[in-house]
Length: 224
Image (cartoon, rainbow, N blue to C red; front, side, top):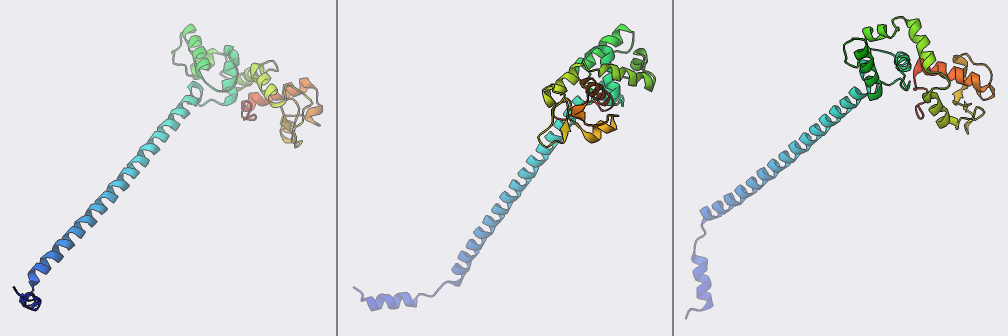
C-alpha cells in the first residue's frame, strides 16, 4: 500500500494538459456567445411584435375615426353644405332640423328624390336643392329661419336642457342668461339689446331661432 506522500508525488508528476484548458474555455465562451445571441434575437422579436401591435392599433383607430367622420359627414356634408342649409332642407322635408345629416334626413331626402324623379342617392345636391326651391341663398336662409322656429323640437330640447325652459334663468357664474343661456356677446351679435334674461320670451325664441339657422346646434355643444 502506498503512502500518502507517494500518492501526492505521483499526482504532482502528472503534467497539465493546456489543450484541455483551452478547449474548456472555448466551449464556455461559445455557450456564452450563443446565449447572448439568443437573448438579442428574443429582444428584437419582442420589439418587432410591440411595433407591429402599435401599428395595428393605430391603423384601427384611423379606420374607426374615418368611419365616424364618414358617418357624420353624410349626404349634406359631401355636397359641401353649411349647417344652415342642411337645417333648411330638414325643415322643408319635415324632419327634425338639427343641422346633421343622419339616417332620418337621408331617408327623407331619398323619398323626396324618388317622388320627384331625381337620382335617389340621399345626397343633398344641386338638383335636390333646386327641386326644393332652394337654389338661391335667400331662399335657403328663409327656409332655415322657418325651420328654426320657436316651436321646433330642436329649440325646445335646447331650452329644456339649458335652463329648464325658464326665460329668466341665469347661470351660477352669471355668464349665461335666459331661456337659451345666451352670453351677452352672442346676444348682442344676434341683434339683442339689454340683458337676455330680462328680454321677453318671444324675443329670446326669435334670436335663438336666428342663431340656430346660422350656426346649427354648435352654440349649444352640451345640449344641441
